[in-house]
Image (cartoon, rainbow, N blue to C red; front, side, top):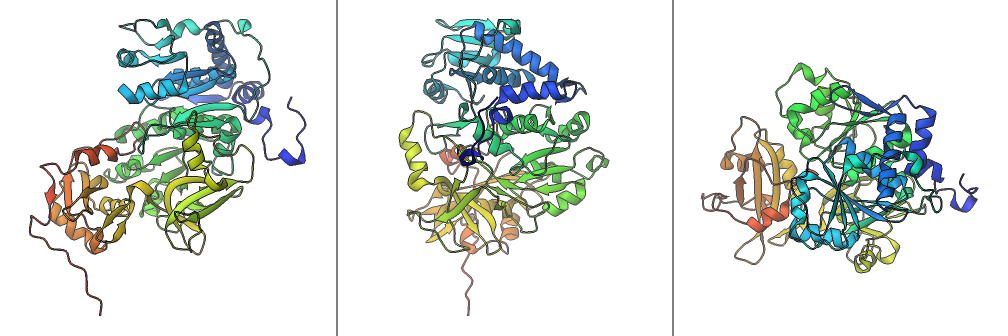
Length: 540
């Protein structure tokens, strides 16, 4: 048992309530036959079955020499096996260090070297990417699937061989504590090399708790589409474990497979990120729209037509703001009325919107969102082996999100843009997010990304990269006419490029850096070359 909780540390959860090993064991004892994982074929894995499989895998990892305090890489797509090895790592008191399945080359070498893990659990399809890179301290691969090749100097074993007798498990050297590091999750690295975010068990507990996700309880089944190497995939597994609910594992998001997956797993809740909700909304009406078990959904960002989404699909809608380093400090009420909001500040955190010198800006003014918590260990513990980035992010005692926000007089928070994605054109700052929101409102547009491209005046012009909705075509002139009454003149894109699909990360974020690198391609439509002049409206 944990030591008695004092008044001073009452906001730190007991280890039995937040440390994965103890929570999973407790759940397996309290309700052993309750499903924890639900699968699209209609089958389920109970808490007791799952706990037992985690123990056996942990025994196999221990036989390889993995011990409490070690870091272990996991490089696999979403599947039950990935969940199991992650939880087995934490069962031993080791740290889970997942890797983005899209990584290769120098980016992959960087995260392997940064974590310094000696053991990696890896999908067979990814092993070949390790051949020609610096593998740092890596000495052992545990391979899931049929391996067609080996890597010189690296021992290899099969994931199936990790199924060992739990009686061989060595005892922990000490109890696993709430402040111990549960995971290192790497940021996207869009502004530099990927940074490894140190998250304690307490941090994950706060991030996935009832204050962060008030809509969830033990009766819910959470359908997860975001990858487990991303905080958006990590949180559901932890949150439902803590509640005693269930987790639906159904692979990657596909529009046509969404409602069948909901029905097959009995899922009651999911998060739809980015264009996922747009894809669903732009499907033709169907009896499937109401023939399902989904009751609750979080839309990030909140689309302007969220009430129509709720009505069409018979669900209650929420939205929120989060990132790997923080703890869902902003959550909306059900069916939020404020268009475009991220929600309101939740209890337990203090938020400010500040200028470049950390001075708070007036209500309604755009600035950077910064945060601090009133509970120990409720936010990240820094960036691993990156003291400079940690100090910069945590300057003046606040965590700096790097996101531009504004707040209205009613306390609603509104995401404006990533600070780095802001576009400056003819003396005006432009939010790419706001421009994208209006473009996607066009019925022919499925998804959109807006980036800056240089012009002859040494400032920015606006390039909109768009993909058509199913069966639709996009006419740049008509799209521009649609936007003119909706956007300020300086926000209207000069260039429009049409692509079948936008480049995306495995977490469904558009890879804007790819579009920036490509710049103005020959297929980009230029309104000035088309003879269309946009002028400022004269106000008398």
